[in-house]
Every structure is written in structure tokens, then in C-alpha cells.
Amino acid sequence: MLITPNSLNNKDRYKFMIGAIVPRPIAWVSTISADGKLNLAPFSYFTAVCPDPMTLLFCPGWSAMRNRNKDTQINIEQTGEFVINITNEATKEAMNLTATEFDADVDEFEWAGVTPAPSKTIQVPRVAEAPLSFECKLQQMVVVKEGVGGGTAVFGEVQAIHVRDDIYENGYILPEKLQPIGRLAGSTYAHINDLFEMHRVPPPENPQKK
Image (tube, rainbow, N blue to C red; front, side, top):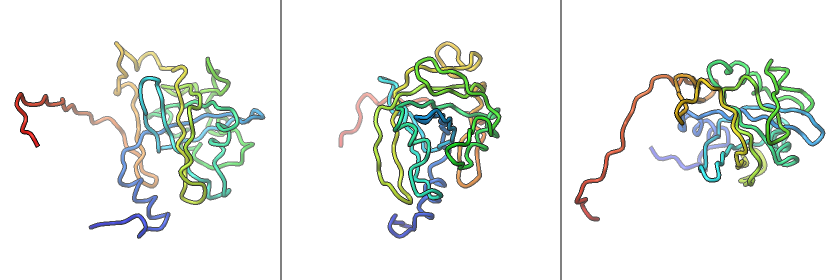
């Protein structure tokens, strides 16, 4: 079967992408508006970019409900700061509550029952209950498209990291302690607890030339 993107409508393209690109980590992004209103929302278009400088990337989509950019993106445009909190088994229910799209004057921290904790290098608070939080300053935004089906890539340079003591040992994050979850399609999520190792195979001494 061969599918071209133009043969699908926006809804079907979205469904295809979120079903094919799995599991996706979840960036639980806290922001604050220029007039001091807190916002907290999850985004599963999220990954690392590079370690030097330590840079993360997440992609908020267009708000079809309001026909504009999402509050998260607007707040970052105003302040240049945000926190990417990592969600896990213990915080998944609270994270899901913040996926509800509210008006900008609703405090999702309060709605989800989580605690805004002070950051060290930026004004935006982190989620105290999160096992990991990355304080970020905006590095750049790349607007792919504004409008239905569009989105923006938000690059953040990490300024400080809050990590729960028990999940970090000898320079490594312990997945069995972190207990991460992943986003699949629709309302489906995955437990990331069935782990296996595959070591990289060294090249042969005399590889066949092309």
C-alpha cells in the first residue's frame, strides 16, 4: 500500500501520524503569561535535539477550538521561558486533566491538583510532583504553518534540571524508578516497563565496499 499525504484530509493525516510514530514521550509544559497567568498542558510531539547546548524540542499544534495558537505558545512568545516537566505513572492522571483546553484565565495547576514550585533560573514554575523538570529559555520557534492542521516547533535551551534523587544514579536515569509512560493513538498510552538491551555491533575489519 502506498499513501500520499495529499490523499488524506487533516484529521486522517493526524490519526495516521499518531498511530505510526509511537510511543511518544510527553512534554508536560508549564508557562506563564505576560500578566502572570499560569498554564500547564501536555504535548507528545516532543524530543531532544542535542546535548551541547542541551536543547529540547516540542511542537504545539493549532487550536482548532479557538482558531489561533495555543496558550502555551503565546505565553512563550511573550516571556521566552518555559518548563518541560516529565510525566510518569504517578502523575499521569494529573497530566491527563491538563489536556483539557480551557480559557487562558483558568489555572491548570489548580485544576489538576498539582503544585507550582519555584524554578531557579526562570520565572515559570515547575510541577513539584514531576520526577524531572527542565527549565528552558526559548532558543527559537519555527512556524511550519498557522491554521488548522498546522504547528510550531519550539526549541528550548535547558538552563537547569530538577531531578528526583532516587531516579538518578552514577550519571544515569533509572527507568525502573522513573516509570515513564508513552503516548500512542487516540486515548491510548503505554507503560514503558518491558525493557531489553541490544548492543551496537562493531564494523568488520574489512567491510565490503560499495
